[in-house]
Image 1 (tube, helix red, strand yellow):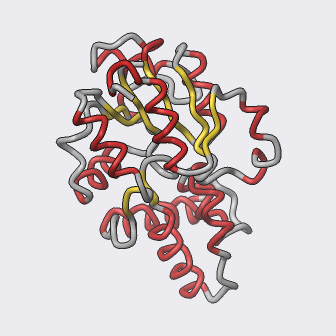
Image 2: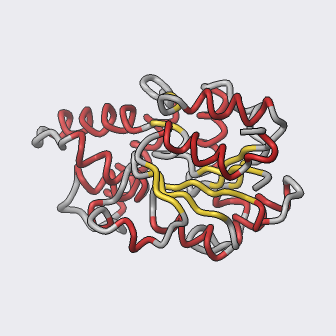
Length: 227
């Protein structure tokens, strides 16, 4: 393996606390029961629509009122995108070791580019990230392999020589379809409906925390890292 690519939310960066803060504030404004933090965490990888639906379950997602709430949620998030957000524990060491051995790492995400770029800038990761592929960059997003091929092409490395790490079935499906070695980040924001049988995702590897991820990556790129 010659490069490591990550999904963003729930895989590389622990963003849930900021989503929880905003959504629970929206509950208070609405005067409804506060949505449980653990439930919000399971919906992060499903996107803004799924998260806002937790606060407004009575509204159709195509209702203009719902869409206005969704936009407000995104605006609030964009304004304070990294109050309680940071790399997952141990991820800094993994990235530093990859960089030390000139192994590029990057991100393939379904998070909009304006939010992804803002987040990376807030965490001082923009210059370190070798490639960032967002929905605006492709015709078909994950689980389609198109963004995976684009990322590999931009760093000039064969897709089959890349590791892809993600916490959602679409991440694993996209990576597998592109011929990448796939790692399921079981420490991430696993959707409730997919948590019971992680082996069904058909990832090449399952890791329970970043320490295990670091060990797995070392084995995959051992000839380069000298591990």
